[in-house]
Amino acid sequence: MHHVVIGAGPAGVVAAEHLRKYDPDSSVTIVGGEEEPPYSRMAIPYYLVKRIPEGGTHLRKSSGYYDRMGIDVKHGRVTGVDTNANAVSLDGGGSVNYDKLLIATGASPVAPPIPGTDLDGVRNCWDLPDAREIIKYCEPGKRIVLIGAGFIGCIILEALVASGAQVHVVEMENRMVPRMMNETAGGLIGQWCGDKGIEVHTGTRVESIDEKNGALSVSLGDGGRLDADLAITATGVAPNIGFARDSGIDVDEGLLVNEYLQTRSENVYAAGDCAQGRDFSTGEYSVQAIQPTAVEHGRIAARNMARGHEHYHWGNVNMNVLDTMGLISSSFGLWMGADGGDSAELLDKNEYRYLNLQFKDDVLVGASSLGLTEHVGVVRGLIQSKTRLKNWKDKLRKDPTRLMEAYLANTQAVGHNAHVL
Image (tube, rainbow, N blue to C red):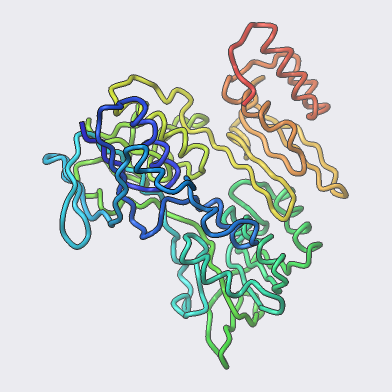
């Protein structure tokens, strides 16, 4: 049996390791599209802030690790999948045959429709080549404009500011992190960043980027103009699935998978940022581009490729935990609320503390928080278990911080098998 994994990120590496465990007599090959050892993009901010060397971003750091594991790591960009011939074609010619295939190709940055993004001083912050260029500008006196205040942008802010650079953030929505925080919480994150010396521009967009006298000139929709040595675009990503569109695999926003992470082709599976599976909260199919989901996908897909029979029974639970300059924010499930539902809210602007709970009947279906970390596991447990809170719903509406009490009272009382994760 030859298992082939396309993609050398967390989903692909975890899958390869579990394939070796579940099917020890098989051959396992990883095909990575970058000329780099397998690494974690989530470690790049720590490299930028110089807490770790470049090698610290590598997913497995010991020399010869993959050889010892019996995992063959190849470098090459996949250009197509032939599900009839069970073969993967590579850029420049050549192919790799498989018995079982896992597509874990992740995502790539979406280029914003802004004139001037092709200039030398404009970068994404997505891969190690990007990071190597950005780190050259991370020094006192440099002027950096960050375009986009979403998850990706916010995780690199600390590195940029710690370098002594002058940082401006431009976000077209009216708040920071608009896809995981409401206006109250997103506004507080913006205020927090402002207190740290970051110039935050929300409710406006970058219209164009020009080069003048060896520097960048960034024009804003509100008429403002920012001078910069470097502009970083962080305006979203899209799954890497173009090579699969003519393969016979069902392709939508991502690669459509069933509860076993299996595509329409029985020998092909998908995991991580390119997989589109059923959303736990809505029942619809969506892509959830977060590393914990990618790692879980990798393990479950490997189990099923090795002729196991493990359901991805939770489905994709919308979950984000973000550290913005030391301020921790999180969102879970239907954090924006459910139709016909109601909510509870706690707010302390002076202490940057916020907690919002969303209910449907007496079930917690979503939550978001700021400056509070002790409830993260309990919130996820309550949402995933769909625990009926009964009279505890009214208690939580009066005091949302009593989440642990509510969890223990309800799960212990009925002998529920939910876990605080």
